[in-house]
Length: 134
Ligand SMILES: [Fe+2]
Ligand SMILES: [Fe+2]
Image 1 (spheres, helix red, strand yellow):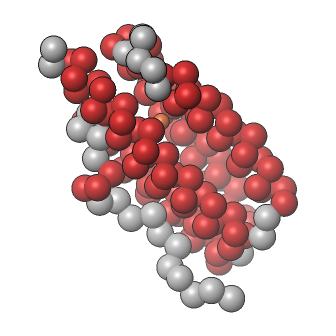
Image 2 (tube, helix red, strand yellow):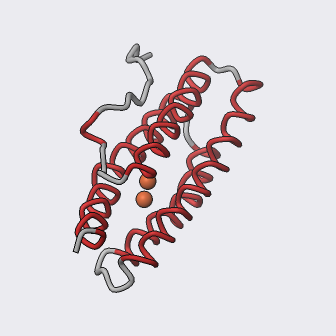
């Protein structure tokens, strides 16, 4: 069994430059970290309500990003791909929950959020800043 500490720690490398998004991400990282801790501790009773909170907040957050893109970046070439990433998350996470062991699920969850923010969300942040300041 691996002994790595499963926390998705917030740091400035994740900043998109859009305050409302960064605030959302900090809260999402806290929720993901709580889910990771319960997953790896095998505490299913506490896990389910946390997963629900994460799913609800993630859905709201995805919508907020998509509304920002729709409003300020309607013709941006990455918009459709970004929205697709958000949509695919739900099928992907449901698959993982039904097939993977808790440790693997924790690793996958952590790397999705880290990767999505560092890739898609930071690119969106830059594009939004350009759009807002032009
Ligand atoms: Fe996103
Ligand atoms: Fe995001």
